[in-house]
Length: 496
Ligand SMILES: Nc1ncnc2c1ncn2[C@@H]1O[C@H](COP(=O)(O)OP(=O)(O)OP(=O)(O)O)[C@@H](O)[C@H]1O
Ligand SMILES: [Mg+2]
Ligand SMILES: [Zn+2]
Image: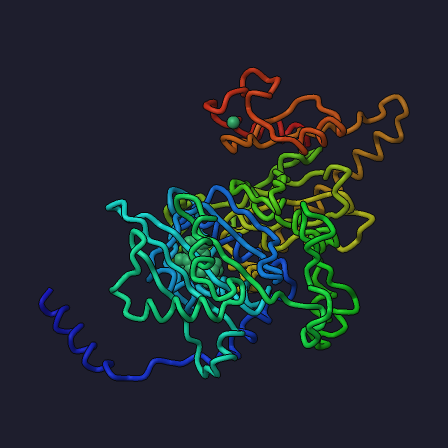
């Protein structure tokens, strides 16, 4: 122990007085360009609310207008942060997320908030409220603002940030009063009134975080009179990406090509509601857009003619250690293949990592006439997502996995083509219409319940209203205290 202390002291001596790296404000822009589309930036903020360190149950995404300025707000009821954590959040590369009770974090790189928020708009202000073990309430606010940095001519990123413990401006941070004054005067949402800054904490419940992003990106970034990139008004239950071919044309050719090549389906590219409804393989976080609940979908459970298969990747010991899968030596990927309900216009593989969608509707089989209407859904935790979580690192594990999944999909399509054409040739044995299980999530306990014998029309009307376990006609699962139904793998295999 003494030796360790000595070594530490020696190290402190060696580095004390050295310069820290500075970060030019222009980096905020370049760092954000990795998000090729705006919903991937929004997803970063959703991930942060979902991750186990925050563990929010609800996230409200809203379009607000504050002093005539369009604001996109994200308010969660998670744990919130004390000042040092908020400082880390506004800095680069700090991430100490670990799995909690099987809830694996999506965040890994310590960059998502910065790249995401600065892709959505030029300025972000974060309000957060947390409770300490001694029950003290800590409120903190921090400003990450390109407008502010430009106004003061900063050549490195500086952060006005301050904190209150039980409503007393924390004296441990001598720059607290100065920061508050800078925030009040340089965040244009509050008209220079400190009371309006403080009022934002009232918008958070007992604990949680509220992020306001403003100076939202416009279709022509240099023209302040051009339309906002996001259409926030046409449909109040949704946020529409109004990205048009014209605005894509303004991108450099390489990025335009990348955009064209991404196999993202038009609907989830255009509609935030549609994208968020499938962002999590097993949705738990309740997301509202302007107070309209996003109806999440359990895609793997609404497939007809389902087949389940498993893929056991060969991993090197170092991969296994890195992925911490060793404790579960039987790691294998569960692959569900089936026919999508008619209202899903797309097809392909939905590849998730730690419950989060990375590749949507990836076309493993390129011929639409063969694969149309069929989805393959898998959680591939052994692969590594890229830093913006829209792609996997294309290494040997990825290639092997891709080949294997493609093979499984081809076998499925082949089998169904044969069985469908055999059935079609026999007039007497016309195949019955595929039946879909419908799953609906209880608005109180968040458990998923299977609905029997509901028509499309009935289901659509159920989806529009609040729904609780007590409304379930199935008496085995009509109370919130009853555990969720375990998926019956046998019956799924028989479906096949
Ligand atoms: N809504 C939130 N509630 C509580 N803590 C948050 C919230 N958003 C961000 N944080 C904290 O800020 C840190 C930085 O967030 P950021 O998204 O930049 O990186 P990350 O999630 O750690 O990693 P990644 O770059 O992969 O997203 C997080 O590690 C987390 O501690
Ligand atoms: Mg993150
Ligand atoms: Zn319930």
